[in-house]
Length: 252
Image (cartoon, rainbow, N blue to C red):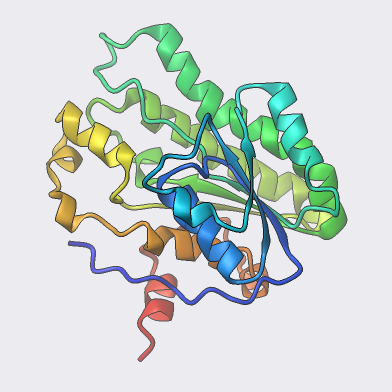
C-alpha cells in the first residue's frame, strides 16, 4: 500500500544513543539496527521486553524505564556515563481510543503524560549531556499530529503537542548545537496497529495487516537521523514518506 523501503543506516561507532519504548515494535527494531551499526545503545523498556521482539535487543543495555516517573527518567540518563549523543523518544501510547464525549478525562490526561510530558522529562534530563556532545533529539511522530482522525482525540491532540514541543526544542536549543527532529511515521505493523484494528473506528483501522509498513522502514529512518548527514537538514519536521527518504531508499 505504501511501497516504502528502509534507508541505508550509517556507521555509528562511538555514538551513545538512548531509545525509549524499546521493548517492542519500532523501538525494538531500531535498537537492533543501532547496535548492528556500531552504536552503544541504552534501551529503555516499560516492564519487560515483549518476547516476540526481544531478539532485537541483543547487545544493548536494556533497563526498565517509565517516562511518566521522574526518578526513572533520571536513572536512565545517569546510565550514559560516557556522555549521550542522541535521545530517541519513541515511547508512546494511542489509548484511550474513543469519541471525545465518551473517553475518560483522566485517561486523556495520561496520554499526554506519556506522549508530551514524558518527552519533556526525557529532554530536560538529557539536555546537559546532549549539549556537551552537540547531539540530537529524535521524536517519533505521526500524520495524526496535524490530521483529526475519528476516535483518536487523545492521540491526535497529544501528538500535536509532541510536534510543537519538537519545534520549541529546535528553536531554543539551536545555539547549543542540539538538533531536534519530529519524524512522521505511517501505519506500521506493530501492536499499536493491532489496537487500532480492534477499535475499528476509522479508515486506518481497516488497513489489512499485509498492507502495513514494515517496522524496519521507520526504524531505519530514525537510525539515519542519528548519523552525521542528518545534521545538514534544516527542517525539524520530517516524515518517513518524504521524497528525500524515498529517494535514499530507492537510488536511481
